[in-house]
Length: 208
Image 1 (spheres, rainbow, N blue to C red):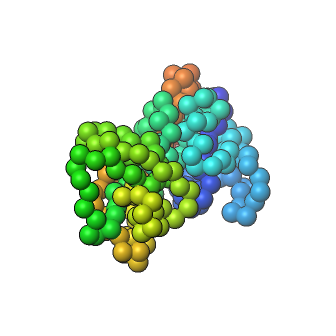
Image 2 (cartoon, helix red, strand yellow):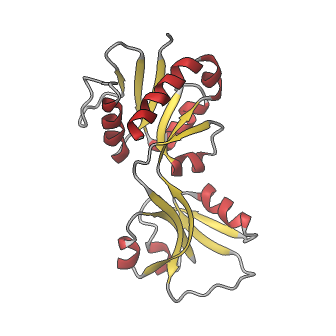
């Protein structure tokens, strides 16, 4: 059997994914949350685990640096990477939404300004509606943008909606439900088909 490389997003879903893998019998004994290491191996060295930034996981998989990636659907959509998305792990469920001030009225024919960490997702969503937009890419609290007149609306991930509420914003429109997904490099799916399928089947068995 060939070994496979698994790219895992740092952050909150990482621990849930590691716990899920443990249930299947896949263990990375030297892994702990505070470790600074970026590369780990399972007991029989058949799986190399690499820890990377969430937005980079689809790139590592698309370029073949990793055979499999586990990452949020938000990062898959934003990266526009050419990969196979094969499994929903149902971890970290939330949604993408358009939000803004309750009383904000925009002229339908006018170009909107959208503040977001996810410009590609925003552009694709509004393009489907035939709405022209300008995006303002922010890395911090996008909720501030409509409050200070930087943007008409925001496109962001919404979990409970409490942050929006506290800032006087409301969900205008839901875009898509997101959660943690498993993606596969297209070449690896052909050349390491047995190994990839076995890994997916192990994960599937814990989700049922």
